[in-house]
Length: 217
Image 1 (cartoon, helix red, strand yellow):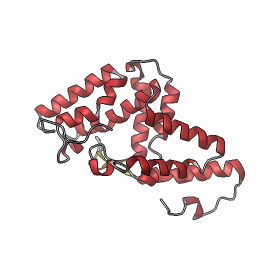
Image 2 (cartoon, rainbow, N blue to C red):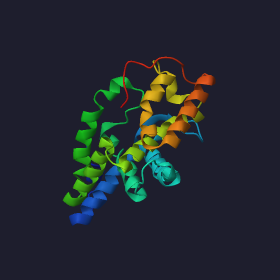
Image 3 (cartoon, rainbow, N blue to C red):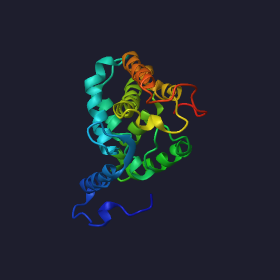
């Protein structure tokens, strides 16, 4: 969190508003280095946050027809592109890592303050508002954004024959609880997730039985 900005290594010869925006865009290059717990479907390596964000940005227009409430696709894409930027400083918090999830809200709020503060004031407020909207899930767009955010890594888990579902203490009921946000935004996608969990249970990729003590995020 306290390390120097990337642009401090080679100061931009550009000032003003554009200089601030370019400095922000250089800093968010760090997103490509933040590794997630999920492995890719195409090759055996872990997904990074930039790849995850791209996948979500594509999932929104592809799957928007399944939203239970009408959504603004462009606004929803903004939400999914912005929401993980804070992990540049806060790090990724895996869905099934209960210990790390305890400090997640504080770490990410502090990261949002620092990262979005690099932008000009009006954009800093806009990006922080987008991040807050995603976290609060009080709009149809935010609920759908959260749904695809939960669907994507679990789809990769299914492709991997378990993936993070094999985390000690995780059961099929844990997965159902942690992916409940999907069905809250889309009955169709929630049903698809349930089918994947049932299939994974039959195949032995996730332990059947009671969920762990931790509740949903």
